[in-house]
Amino acid sequence: MNIGQAAKASGVSAKMIRYYEETGLVMPAQRSEKGYRVYSEKDVHTLRFVRRARDLGFTVDRIADLLALWRDTGRQSAEVKQMAIGHVAALRKKITDLEEMAATLEHLADCCAGDHRPDCPILSDIATGAHGPAKSAHRFGALSDKKS
Amino acid sequence: MNIGQAAKASGVSAKMIRYYEETGLVMPAQRSEKGYRVYSEKDVHTLRFVRRARDLGFTVDRIADLLALWRDTGRQSAEVKQMAIGHVAALRKKITDLEEMAATLEHLADCCAGDHRPDCPILSDIATGAHGPAKSAHRFGALSDKKS
DNA sequence: TATTGACCTTACAATGATTGGAACCTCTAT
DNA sequence: ATAGAGGTTCCAATCATTGTAAGGTCAATA
Image 1 (cartoon, each protein chain N blue to C red):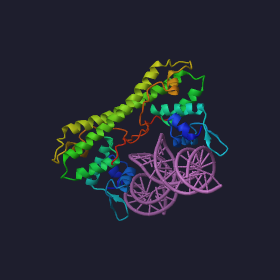
Image 2 (cartoon, rainbow over the protein chains, first blue to last red; image 1 turned 60 degrees about the horizontal axis):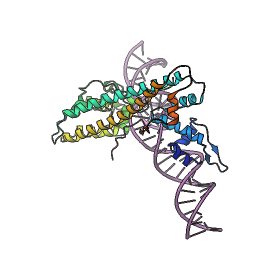
Image 3 (cartoon, rainbow over the protein chains, first blue to last red; image 1 turned 120 degrees about the vertical axis):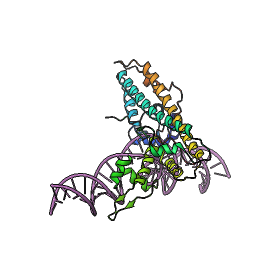
Image 4 (tube, helix red, strand yellow; image 1 turned 90 degrees about the vertical axis):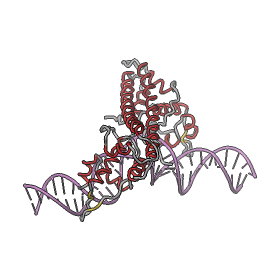
């Protein structure tokens, strides 16, 4: 199977498959005589694993850990569970942050006439900082769930 | 006021102030004879505006729009409100996505014994894809709230 | 057989917001 | 005079992903 087929079968783009290989998340694929990457069903299975883990919001680093646990038949489920719980906590934190933003903004929008007049509590609020410090991480990416 | 002072006063790091200037989000600061950036209270006010808008999760592009509206005393509040509502929708969408991830993962964690044994429904699920497609954007950054 | 079009290869750039560092200049206080 | 704090520019890294350019390969068709 070539990379295009593997991409379709796994849901991971060919671009990303190459990237995952380059960064060491997955083992380098076999190569055909002419240098084409060749994938087995097992490889596709691994890629699907990666895809699903991404869908659950895990970072690539964490997926590497998950893959290692997946392959280690002697793992302790406690370790996996711990990772899952930690990730849920990170997700919930992010959700809380976003909810605070949404709530603040929704409140402001409710206070705004939203007509032809220029008076706007939304702008006034952003300008004067009437709402709480809203100490968000003000950085959207990454869930900062890094390996120490 | 030098950039360090402006940074402290506005809550925007000196690094980011330079970046915002470079990208045109804020006007280039005045310069002293020796080339130091010099900031007025008004400049700091603007930077604070930017900071608060970031805290509300707006992208830099959107903040540019907000700044333009803020400066335009002839604006119609409807325009601002529309932006706010659109942003709230984007936030809610992101929240929904994250919640789905958290719920799925939490359910899996609940099903996992989390002991010394290797059997782990979390890994099995990720491997076999028993849970729904969970068609998340699988890209955390940016709220994709772009200007068309 | 020659050509076309789809697919593969590598390598590099851009995204978005932010941080880090290096190399160098300026100000202030001792 | 010198040290230290803080300013300047420029370049690189982060994270996951996409885009593009230049070139090689494969299958089928005219």
